[in-house]
Amino acid sequence: MSSPLERQTGTWWKVPVGRAEKTWLWLSVGTALVLFFWMGWWTVAGAQNPMGETYRVTPSAYRQEVASYERAARSTPEGLVPAGQDVYIGAHQWAWEGLPVVLQAGRRYRFHLSSYDVQHGFSVRPAGHLAEEITLQVLPGYEWVVDMEFPKPGRYEVQCNEFCGLGHRMMHGEFVVEAGGAR
Ligand code: CUA
Image (cartoon, rainbow, N blue to C red; front, side, top):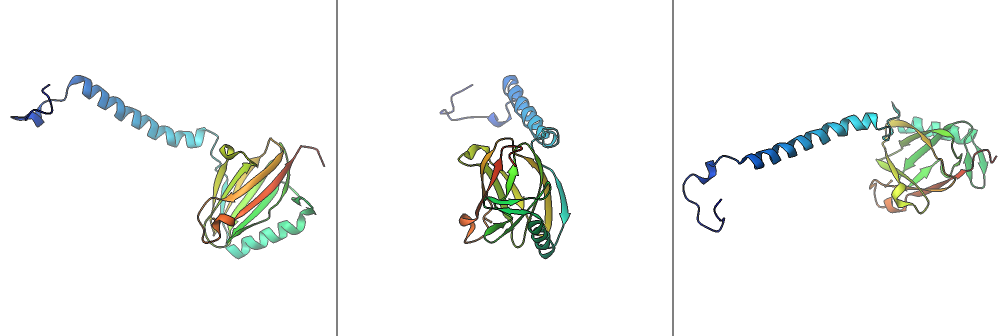
């Protein structure tokens, strides 16, 4: 191959692609396709993306669900202790309704999530562990029910991770996970 600094002459743009270059091109196309289909397959098979169930709900109806859940729950200084395995969280500008809540480690809960106004992000992490965060979209009009279990007791921080207006950065909450059988 001639130097790129030299002036090219003739039909240089029609020179056939070399064997090695072709191989690399196909290898990269192949890798891209494998990763593309992997993405779809792993979403289902990877058991890491909470799918849950979704229901249509009006903000006012959801608000009532949260209120009746709160009435049934037991109130303690650390927060609400849910009556069953269902936990209701209501998001609105700019606070979390239903928090703080007191949960038991190693027990499976059904988290119900919805918003009364705009889109929010329900972001949960063990206090001080930025890397162990999970974020779930919270939408008005939809009730999303996701199974969650917290193996480690401790304090968990909740943050809104979807820009939802002026007070977005103040939209915090927290809950406590107690060692199983503590109560
Ligand atoms: Cu709610 Cu940001």
